[in-house]
Length: 261
Image 1 (cartoon, helix red, strand yellow):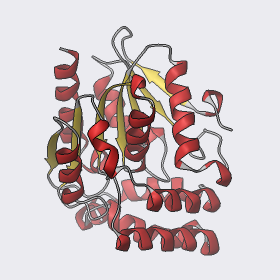
Image 2: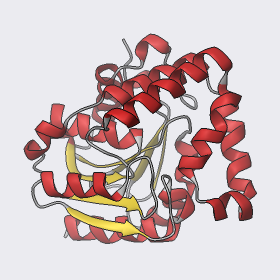
Image 3: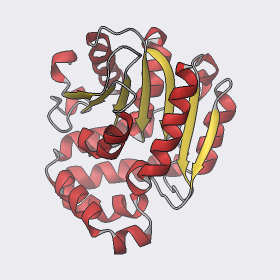
Image 4: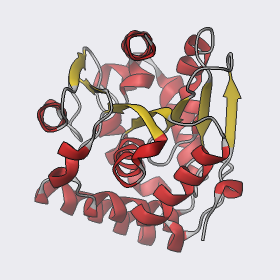
């Protein structure tokens, strides 16, 4: 069983208020929050985690279940010894943020859900399971074209090759078995019937052109979580904090300042 010692983290910014905890997307790691870390550190205590099996966090194929990953993240939050945190999750990080908030409500001061969903339609689930099978049987290189087609706009792929090169190198170092288990976990995720139990202030952010967790999924989160608010990020696909870091960070900072009063 994973625990807090298995989770790699970095921390920056002034202490005293509730920390801001960042959970990254599938296949990447905490370093992809670099723009948010640099901007938010001036006014917020910011912590970024590597999810199990990613970056420098431990985790094998058998550890990649929603229960195990949520428990590990919850343990890492508890180890901060600060009380409730502002929990921010991108893509699969958003799934874990929802799960942690629902299962351990005492851990969350607020919630920011970015390019994520409460559940996925049957077609999306089938595509995720097919991606898992590709990773398992053909290796990480075989999943890259499909992933990048969802993650980035065509203009980003053409005009910002450094983003693609960085993500490529990260993904090629991932364990295909862990990656496959992660997509199977995502495909099975469903907390749609529990969203009314989220009681903390919630901000939903979505890239205008996100094909994986589209605006309709974000609207469902907004409509199902009491008093949630929604902001759409122009000119972004599924990884809006990477494609449009200033816009996303601005929305996060405004929301956190309002919650902190």
